[in-house]
Length: 441
Image 1 (cartoon, rainbow, N blue to C red):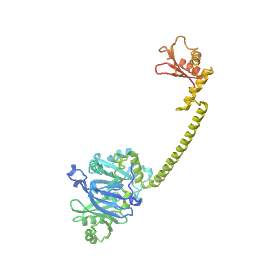
Image 2: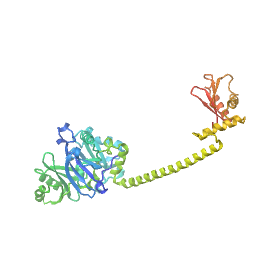
Image 3: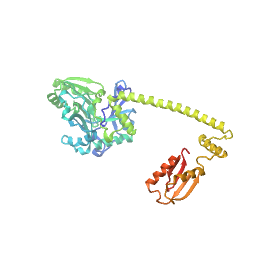
Image 4: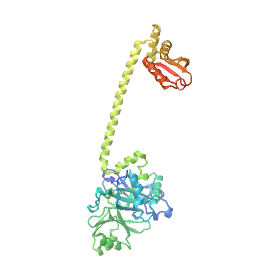
């Protein structure tokens, strides 16, 4: 199933770490480069009370938290919202490269696709279910970029919970109000990232591209108010003043509540759950889906109660088994006071009863004479001369027949019915012989 967008852990009493993966074009070694445990990464630590704390550290020295998400650069992740036919998840994963081939500048064969239902669209984007289509929020990233990033984190013993584009760290546009995040890249240039739609964003250089970008956004998108996250809002003040834009500055680097819209890239073959296998992936999927968190908690409580109840019932049955076993041993010792070592009371009692019957002159059901007499009756209607030899050992009467004599299914069924009538179990051995034992023996 397609993974649901991650939910901010700041509301669930646990810390959440957002690690910003540097743009692929700035990796050490260029396009063929890779991250290492010494690569310095920017991060945002979200505390349980909602307070955000920005910082940077080497990959191997990142803060240790349970919930860690990867945030890729906007230019490394293609994201869009489009109407797609309603297909099962497996077929949708196969169809997305063909559906988006004309929209993307890179070869879709080299990309990994992820999606979830677009749940926050305007009424003007609504599509009737009769058309057989649905709006999807889709994200695509080159497999090489995603695989090498996950490999670097795995080598550092860090297992991300989710991965998504940096645009989802900002709230979507709201009645002319657009959000911008200011950060400093590895090349010491200050960049701005502005979310222009539910799954769209753009980046610009604050030094020479801010005015042109804001002018274009005002004319085409109706930009009237600018909300700036992170340090560096003063750099946008001249451009905002020149365009008559209202500027609102937030000290925190991101908005954690915006992550609920994120398209998690760790789907399909890249689905992960901190290294705990399929069970961990299933649990992680429940944790990312805000709608299933409450049912999952109640299901976990019911499972714990059921396990406790099963263990209590097992202890009860074990105590009853011990009582029955002790009563059997006492009954056995009362009947046979000379027997002091009881390993298997039932088997030992059968052997002693057999011995008592033999002393009294009453043959037991598994004696040779009894089984031989019953074997004669069973084989009375069988063809003459099929029996070659008989063997008796440990209460079992084994009849060896000529090769191929018992190939007739009718003969075998007749012998089985005759044996059942006399209270005898008739079983065919691996060598073709017939083994006769008394029922219950």
